[in-house]
Amino acid sequence: MGFYKEIERSVYILKNGKSLLYPTDTVWALGCDAFNKQAINNIYKIKYRDLSKTMILLVDNIYRLYELVGDISPFIKKVILYNLKQKTQPITVVYRVKNNKIFRNLIKKNDNTLAVRVTYDPFCIRLIKKLDKPIISTSANLSGFSSPKSFKEINSYIIKNIDYAVNYKRYKQSIYNHSKIIKIFSKKIKILRM
Image (tube, rainbow, N blue to C red; front, side):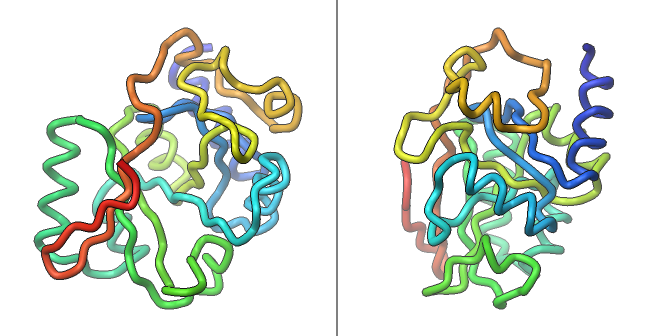
């Protein structure tokens, strides 16, 4: 299937509360509609992931980021826009947010934080735009195992238990194992994952 057919099929899957296995700007990921609690819980089950561990949200642009976390500082905006322009290792930023009921599963309980990445991957951008919602992005591995940089590295258990595997970029290898994760406090960057 071509790029646009895969977008259409993937959006249909996500709108129906199903799980998606898809390529990102880093590794292959499991995703779903970020507003669908049941779909999120299903991804936790598929990965055997501890419910206390949060997952990343993927957005297509900085304006959707504002919708999720409110205003961001000019410094954070500059960091994100620079990363999008340079297309270096993607950066996930951890934001302090109000304890929103919609994102209860995704907000870290002890400090009310939410991890969000503005993607520069064309497939992910198109997918999120067409769905018109953020999506979950968690590596397509069983908890505790390494993240798959290509489709052939994905555990067969994952493939059997998701609702749809995108038929795009299956023969490409990612150059990144994951995104950098950073937290920013008054122009100071704390690196949580390199």
